[in-house]
Image (tube, rainbow, N blue to C red):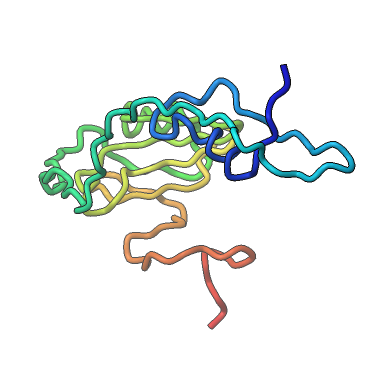
Length: 176
């Protein structure tokens, strides 16, 4: 059986059958080129594709933005240090744990390690106290909690203004 020649409009109409549902039509009619020497016109009695019942309408998306659920403000939790002391550059992980106790979290990637300690100002300071290790030796620390001190030069002293550290500059200094 030969498929009748279809115009572009008829082919598009056939391809769009089922357009409101999630299902794709199994088959669509293909355009058949006209034989050489014959005009490319639609036969007068081209069959009309049957149109099925439209799929049920989906719920319209909400037009107004929904407000997120109200959250309680983040506040600092009281903290009383139990292990205090001074962390020095060059200390090992076990030396730091012996001085400040077990960290609340620890991350290791390659030769770098990060020990996170409570400081009582996690919300207002924006960070835990963090000891940075390189090959199991302290190389830096961010210290905000009372009772925790670092004898080295911190990359983030408490009075340092937050700003991006640009590549090729020492600690974000611009030379100005």
